[in-house]
Amino acid sequence: MPHFVWSSEYELGISVIDSQHKRIIDYINSTYDVIDRGANVEEISDILLQLVDYTFSHLAFEEALLEEIGYQDFDGHQLAHRTFSKLIDNLCKRAAKGEDIGAELASFLQNWLITHIMQEDAKYVDAVNTYLAQNGANRGQTWLHRAVTKYFQ
Ligand SMILES: [Fe+2]
View 1 (cartoon, rainbow, N blue to C red):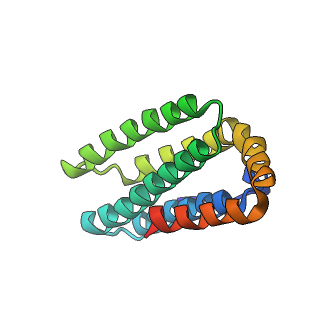
View 2: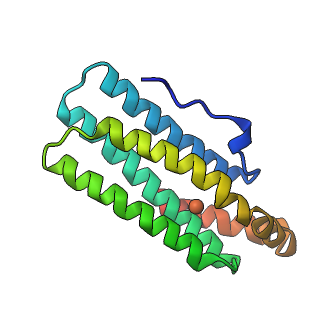
């Protein structure tokens, strides 16, 4: 399967978020690799679990950040995440029943992620940068550091 190649146009300019998006893409590409080499169902579901788990941690982190900065469209953004999460949950349920949905899940997540970054995430960039400028890099960075530890460990 063709790999998902990161492009600078997907970059928001918020390094902590960009690196999480890139990591999700790494997981998507690992999923394609596992499928391509004809791995068995257990191996595929193993990498899918990692992909979904990391993606959900990222969404939770992003929502915590948007809440912290008092983002005006927090509810709308959270709703977009929840709608997406339900679709992923449904795919995971199908996988648990033994359906071979690895490629479908990875390509759905890939398409969703790019559209979401460029159409929805792009809208919060100014608000995040304003927060960091107004709260001083120190307090902002301290918050980011704590949140990364909380959501990714
Ligand atoms: Fe988002």
